[in-house]
Length: 393
Ligand code: PMP
Image (cartoon, rainbow, N blue to C red):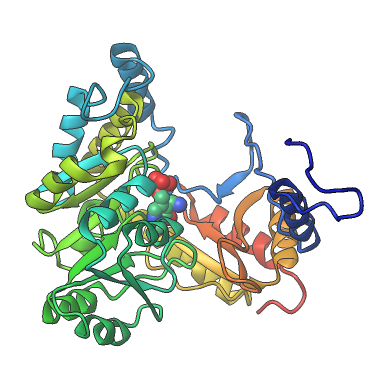
């Protein structure tokens, strides 16, 4: 650290590093310090916290394809997409993703996060107005900030509020929403959203991270579910790291949009291309979904069943639109204690607290799994209900 320049009777100014210590103390006092749990390879707990809802992360076809790709192409892609980071397998995955999702084109990124940054910053600039749902994911919020566009946050899933903002900026608006919201698992009214966009000459940008593989016939995603497949004025993003069990992300949409991203999106041009094993794993997972198109419907049934069993036991779970359910708790410490009690009974659930959710709005988050049978499902609901803090429900 640089030597202090103050005289002995002047107080030392607080440095950046001192401020970090103060923030850490405040976090500790509020019960907000995070310690990432380390998963063991031989874990016997039931995981309802991860996003591998279809069980594809460990599917033999998927892990086998990743291992083969590592041997063929290497562990990493070796460069950015426009230099050496595009293998034949990237190009094939892009074609297959576009076909599966029902859009003209797709572009693969190193994560869903960088796909969201790309979609927003390539389509919006200082002349644009982004209208963003209050519950949108951090990656969408960061994309808005990076774009330098005007930003209007609107009430959650309220098409009238969105229409009101879009109508003030004809032709300059972009409406930004998740299809399935990542914490509570509710769905956006996408058909209404598209209608208000069309009335106001706006584009609709949909983060379908939790829709791909789960919503729509065969798991084709939210646009198929809501009858908007191939809409020329919708651009979507997906992640390859949830239902597909791999890693990476993609932007999907009309050819002219994807070509614009290929030329200009900074997280495409300056980021190292997605690692070939992840590319191959995602392509293999799509293959499994094509062969077994019922997996998405199955996980939705499990989510509905879990919701029913929890509500029957007095746990106020949110109604799932896809595979995700939230349970509002309130205080961060109560949520942490509840999740820890579930874990002691062999069930790992997600625990969301600030900054992932607003202050005082901590919740448990559960993801259904396609492989959860009816008996186990009832047991899990019982564990969650029996460990609930006093006053829940
Ligand atoms: N959008 C949403 C709605 C998400 O839940 C996530 C994952 N947390 C992302 C984007 C980011 O995707 P990735 O993890 O692939 O970066």
